[in-house]
Length: 577
Ligand SMILES: [Ca+2]
Ligand SMILES: [Ca+2]
Ligand SMILES: [Ca+2]
Image (cartoon, rainbow, N blue to C red; front, side, top):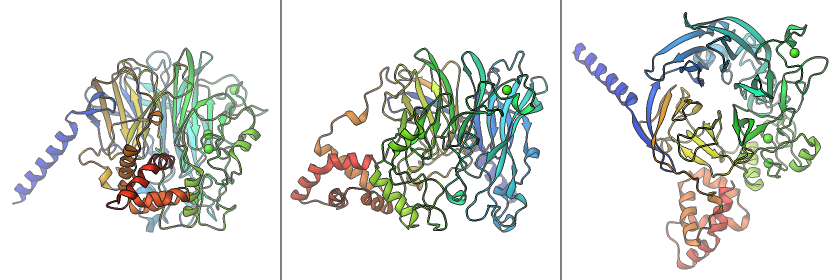
């Protein structure tokens, strides 16, 4: 009997392995076909995947604190560095709250990795960022500062040397070990990119969630040039000859240098987890993707010394956050009408004008929802309403620019992995690379959280990393069975198909009233009841009775005429939510 059980277990494990390793075909929205293969799984939250000059994939594991090299042909993996002993706090995520007081795991952990372009020749340098300290570790309870004062972690940037023969990283050299961090909004992306022909190391730091949840009473410093919070930073990849060791890693022409040098390169960021450099239209540009608040995930063109608005302007300076803030809470002890240290925005346009010529709008926003809908969302959040709102955004976790030509129509596209309802988003850039030319195209949808991606140099293959947790927002009806992959590196190889030209923006097509009624009915009936209530409340009063008609099982002829007449406007209003 015992033997028999053992055999059954063996066979089921074998079947699992075969089903996940076997190649499958998946088709994109414009008919692009890809073969899909799982190269690695059960990693401890892979966070960065980079295609190295050694033709291996380099990985960081956010919770595992390991760096490894993965052979993209065979899936064989070698750990080259284990940083878990450098982490001066325990694995809170593995300790029951009853024992650690509910202390949090930081957002991320071991995060960014960047390889020196001459890794295999004269410069065997690997740059890493990781959180190493937690001020709350010795505090009683959950370690948060009083009155939602937040969780204070600290991160460091460090350069290692790669020994290709021993397959190890060693000889660490600290670039900066005073980077503020949190249990929220650490950003953490590292990228080597040139400015005027010389390579630098860029690093994104989030606003630490200062203004929301357990950090709701923590002051937000995204607008302060003297803080590293809510910034993109620029460092040297090799030290200069300045006297002070801390100045040696900071370029002497950084925009906010005073008598003390500052790594700040741009400001006004919320949580820019994506950084990518590409030459588009003959000009090299630095792009960033960034998580929005209740809407307005951003893609920004990062320029020296410029201000990207957070938390004074969210998304475009279009007024959709007028009267609102980047967060809301029901904790009346916290400041302002929305109970948060995020300022209440009286006018986004006025705030942008106050920042002055250094203010930059994003080049794309996912999505600029209406003031009316956002007001409903914030009011319900502040009221701690059981109709906990959901809203339309994507949670962009990284960014790449596809400059290859292997996949038809993809040349000069932004590729954005998204955590929400797992998908890779493609946005085609205009020829000059300074604006978006296409509708939002969705690829590889599944019940996963996509964390990062890498591209093969020939442009035929994408490598997507997924979180260890498979939970996305929404229950399993949005999660087709059999595609979940925990802590995976998934290979997607282009296999044919697609369109050489991308169709025009969907928003520009005209929809007949009859078709609009079909579309808006399907949209409304797909929603969960609580989301129907939030969406309805976010509509202008005149449209609410039309919304109610869509929930009826059958309509009279008169109701149908009424619904059709109002359907195009209602469809537009709901899509702006
Ligand atoms: Ca310097
Ligand atoms: Ca912005
Ligand atoms: Ca806005």
